[in-house]
Length: 307
Image 1 (spheres, rainbow, N blue to C red):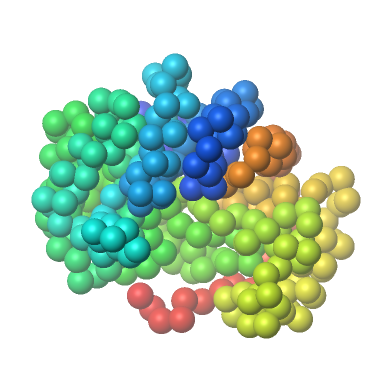
Image 2: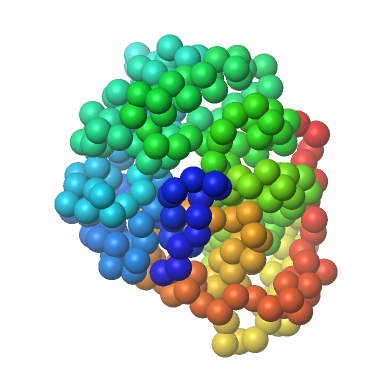
């Protein structure tokens, strides 16, 4: 598995990462999925304190304990579960982040986090204080680097201008090309990496294609696509690209074609899924003609409002 540099940092992440939210709560199943990822050469593992009330961090930490120095562990903070654990609130304050990191370190069973990310963000946040928290955590040795997880252009612009973030995690796929409008060009310019999630667009860009479409998608469409437009777009892409490429391969390689993208963090609920994704990520890159054809068919989505 090839690796790419994360921003201007000393972290090199595998082109395919494992988004750990889908590994479940069964320890043996989670370990099987993570071991499959390690066997495939994946070194980037992405979790968050929000997932399964922190249990996800525990499973990730336990499964990676024996290879801790060889992997990049990323987690996120900024959300607080309420006392009943039936909802959460947003808290990007310096005090919360500096407290949350200690809880994450304890659950992960490690004394440092490779990449610590703000799990969201709005332009109304106390951004300077949030940045100060992350910078202090770096100085104190609790984290190696930091980034944000956001799809909001105005938030991304603020952090790109004011902080030393090395990455922005964002949703990106052939069916969700919103980052191409502003975010990816900005990150390329600033030397900041994108970590992409949702490359298969809820499974619709997997090999099963629209068999994976939910009832909601069938009724309401996906982003600015109607269901009939989805059918036409996906079938057209499938027709113009060689059958030698799987749909999953096309989807992953589309993401990896952008120079700002360091890693595609794909979820998996089975070990076999990890292996299928790894095969797609290791495939030959899309050529210029293939990319141009895909872009001529898929919409260049726009944000509903210029956030």
